[in-house]
Image (cartoon, rainbow, N blue to C red; front, side, top):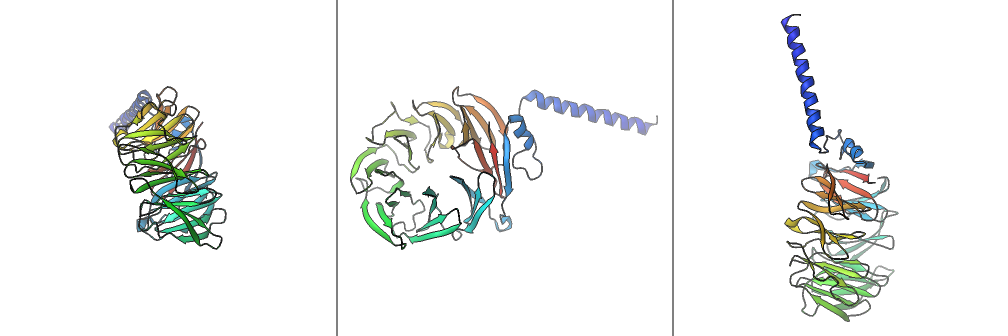
Length: 382
């Protein structure tokens, strides 16, 4: 054999040895990682190893050259809404990703408040307008000017079976009814005792709950401006209130999460939950666990019953879904953590480095993920 042949043979053995070494090192590390095939949001190899299944993936016609990108995702019943940073709205069937409708929901730059879904209708506050959509047909059914909202970028909307309630720039809750001809009839207004700015609204058929920038949580009669109770916290409240099974959850700038009785306003835990940083997001309410994001403290799993933390992920941003005792959590800089809500232990983690948009879905065992370029995927968990 000549020298050239020997050199080639040596190179082949070196390459084979290097390949075996890399594979052994990957297996020995115990970490699950991988590279996606072109176009995959999450590598199929990773999903198979973890027992997860991609139900579907689509690519939206995002105008990336015009700096358009996916901004927010919303789960509303059978619909998945995807809103871009230029206020273009895509509506997809969340079961299979098929098209329902799409439209320019608002002019670029106008503030769009997270929508409500009530009585098979989607309600948006866009700038100072209330816009009502029928998702089945993709038609705008009503557009109503709300002078009370003004230029409030944090406007809040609530509805029960009789009235709409809007937080106005005048620091009042405005109750009104929209007539069949599209005109609104104002019924009454209400405010906190200290006339503080209203930051969040919830409504049931019997009560309306609102929070204020001064840290008040107020319950009033749904039919008139009669306050039922008021609970005063020690810091501003800007996170949306959450209502679940007779309890109102309020998170504040005082770094505490409060569980209050919806009927009496009494604290239902021995003490509020201390999160260690300002609470700017509403907690997600799971079967036994609350999922609370608190700034630099990351994401907590908090026992609904005791108000004590079960686990904490410092880089955690949101729970994606839960199944049984397991919570599937997105954390920066792109990691999926699977946590056991019974033991508080991490089960495993996956590389989600291409995912940077997501939505919380606590209705079933599916994750809805996206990136800013318009790839959207649905992944089911066991």
